[in-house]
Length: 297
Image 1: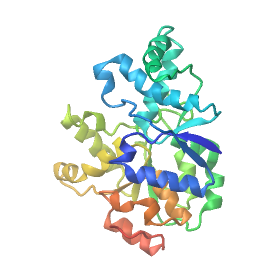
Image 2: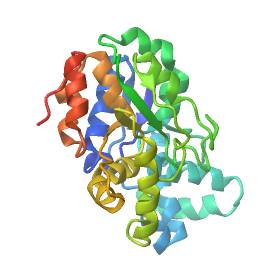
Image 3: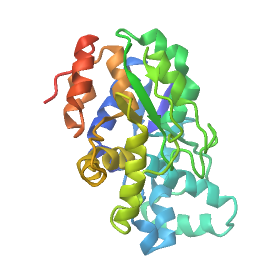
Image 4: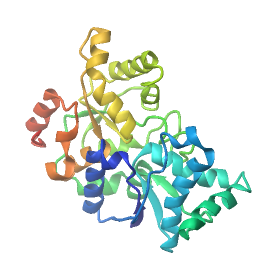
């Protein structure tokens, strides 16, 4: 299997561990990722506040780079915000006849053009649909037995353009967790918003949403996510939420590929658990107990 690979900005900075673990897991599975040369930001966070056309041109430029390679590969995107933005281009092309002309007028300045047809897919979709639990299970070298993992999908991986799972009650991550030998934490918060997009504008609402998730995760050893914004939010605001709520709500928040990589027997150079802010002592102790431990740096 081969895919065009778009890491996006977050995976080159604040979510570097997501990028490294994703590539390492895909390599272990024998999947080739083809990273585009000269890719640019998709504008996911800020472009639309400046210009609707800019918010379309930026992701379309990356799709045009892929189209120029003339290969029939899907576009694999780990970042949920990037996935949303790249999917948005093709979704809007079908309803706005003049949009493609406007986009290409800008792209032509770089001798690029886009006519549609590149399929943008979230990493979770590819892992759950193309790879699947059986292929994951076949590669497991060290089962994560004894670990209870809360699957967290977030918003943008599923809404509004998911299509590969139920947007309100998703379930595709659960069989993957079980394939690793771990136990799924029973909860109903997997598709609830964590409030990351509100942290700078309505912080009190964001803290309330984050708190609800962390409380519901009690009893789990860690939360598994596939979104850099969700991970950073749940990872970095635990101390503040714990102080506000008057109870310890600390829990490790790991990327799904990091957990898959643990079970595959990959080392710290491929998992980068040392970059996770909330890598709790309790999880480290349990990983050591089950001999799947990684040294925290």
